[in-house]
Image (cartoon, rainbow, N blue to C red; front, side, top):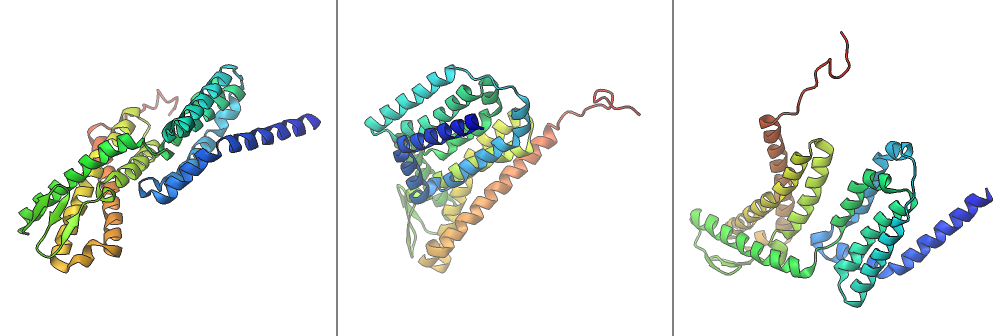
Length: 288
């Protein structure tokens, strides 16, 4: 009992120390989840990762623990990443060190076999980290122009007089500005996260899981472009109020649900064209 209490005390002290070391990193993450709508899904990542780990509890219990000193090297590497990211004001590197730290702790306390079992939950934590600004800017701006050009084409095809300059769409009664929030990056990040979960829970074949994750990118871009053009039609027919406020937010939810429906349809099409292999009764060990 005294040993258990001593170990528990050491564990609490370790967790408090890590919380103090990573206080700024936690604050950065929470600030992004709270203030940046592109990563509001970050609040759900840690609980979902814990659930994914809990799902593996029986296999974890049946796997003998084999602590490895290599875990200390991984932990040291995570602290080096944290130091470099903090001193260099590179928040992405500092946040990434948190996931590396989790992997190193598993190896040090339980061993490589446990890390292999927990590889997906640990990797899933990466989705809570905002991508570096230099990459986000390179993605966001092209997406803005894609949505603007598609919206212009659809409005023109629908007989609406339209003039586009960059990401500004001028209509007879209103001018629409395709801002960064309308670029589709927000729906892309959220849909990709849901695509990962959808593939995990509905599929066993790895290549289909990967295909579904990749498919979220064009689906998110296409549905967001449809949202921009739909906003243009609504603004032309019903006035500027249709392009802002509740209607604008509600259209975002509708488009996101449509993207999920398209992802589900794509999955069904893949299953139709490539059904899972059937297991014969003899192979499965069944007798008649």
